[in-house]
Length: 543
Ligand code: VG1
Ligand code: CO
Image (cartoon, rainbow, N blue to C red; front, side, top):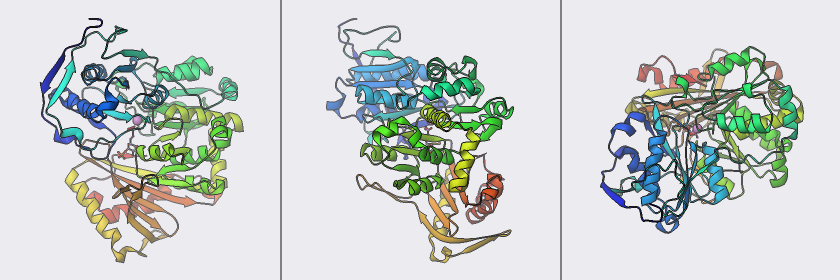
C-alpha cells in the first residue's frame, strides 16, 4: 500500500454525556466502559483531534504513549487509525507503546509536535476490572482540559491500518508512525557526583511501568546496581498491585526499606508523574516537604544556575512549607487550584521554576508536567552535594524552617449528590459571618478561625478567574483545613479533607502527623458531618 491513499471510513456515532469535561485534564473511567460501550474511546479521541485547529492539524506530528496497562494496545490502534483519517501527518509512538506522561511532555517540546495523547489512568488500578484513561497534552507539552467539543459531532473517521506496529511507513501519507525509544532526555542535571553516590548508597526502587526509564537512567547511565530496580517489567495489570506511590499502596517498598539495609527508596505511579521518597528504615518524605526541601536546595542543581530561580508554585491544598522557603529566598509563590495545568501557564510566561502538589507530584520548567524521575534525580543530587541521608536532610530542614504536619483524608466512592450537599452546606456554614472568629476547643487545644473562603484563582498571566476550587479554613495559628471534591476520580464522588499544622519547636518534630492533627480532623468531621451523612466510619485512604 506504499504511496497509495488510505481509504477513510465514516462511522455514525452519538455523544456520551459523561465525557463532558468536569475540570480534570483527561478522561478516566472503568476499563469495562471502554470495552463495552460502542465508540466510547473513539468518541473521546475524536474530541481530542477536533480540538486541534484544522490548519494546525493537517500534516502535523503528534506523540502517542501509554503506561502499558490493559487495553493500551487496543487503544493505540484506535488512536493511530483515527489520527490518520483526521489529517495528522506523523505519529511518534513509544517503543511497545510505552511513554510516561513527563516523557510525552518532553518529546512534544523537543520535536515541536502539535500535541500528544497518553493512554493512562495514572495511579488508578489497571486491568479489566480496573480503570483506563486518556490524557491530552498540547503543543507546549502541558495537559489540556477539553471544553465543549465532546458532543459536537455525529460521525467518526477511521483509516483501516493494520500491522502498523511492525511497519515503517516511509512514503506513506498519512500517517507516518515512528517508534521512539521510551527513554528520552533528563538533561537538567550534572550527574558526576550522583554516580559516585550511587556506588555507595544501597538503593531500591519499586516501579511499575517506569522500569525502562529507571534501568536506562539510573542503572545503565548512573551505575546503580541492576538488582536495585525491581518490578521493572511493564505489566498490563501491574502484577495485581496498585500503582499508587504512597504509604498505603507501596507497602512492599515500605517493608523493604524498614529492613534498614537500603539508604534510598522511591516509587512511581503508572504514568511516571508521581513519586514517593523513603529514606533508611522507611523514613517517609511528605510530598509537600519534598517540594519545600527541593526548593531550599535548588542551588545544588546545575540547571538552576543556568536559568535562575524565578518563582515557585504550589496547589492550594499543598502545605505552606514551600512559602517559608520562598520567603527566605525572596522568591514569589503562586498558589493555584489542584492540577498541573495552572503551572504550565506560569512557566510559559517565565514566572515559575519549580512547582508541586501534595499528591506526590513535583516538577520544574524543563517540561510542562510533574516528573517523578526528575524529582528522584534531584533528591540524589541534593544527597550527593550535601553528603547527608534523606532523614538528615529532612530533619535539618525542619530545624531551620519548622515542620508543617500534614495529612489528607480521602472519602472515595461517595454518592455524588450526598457529597455535593455536604460541600454546599459546609460552604454556607463557613462563609457565614457568624463563623469568623469562632473558637473550637478540642482537648487542650483551642483553634480560632481567622479566615475562610471558597478558593478562587486569578491567573496572573491571562486574568482568567476560576472559582470554587475548594473550601478553606485558616486558623489564627496558621493551621489550615481544606475540603474539596476530586475532579479526577470517576467512581462516584471523592471528597478530600486536608489538614495542616505548623510546629516551630524542634523538640516537637518527631511526632506522628495524625496524632498532631487529630484535633483539626475532629473539627473537620464535626463541621462537615461527613460520617453521619455518608454512614462511613472513616476515610478510604489517609496519606
Ligand atoms: C488528583 C490530585 C491532583 C493531581 C491530579 C492528577 O486530582 O489531587 O493534585 O494533579 O490528581 O494526577 P483530584 O482532582 O482527584 O484531587 V495524575 O498523577 O493524573 O497524573
Ligand atoms: Co500520574
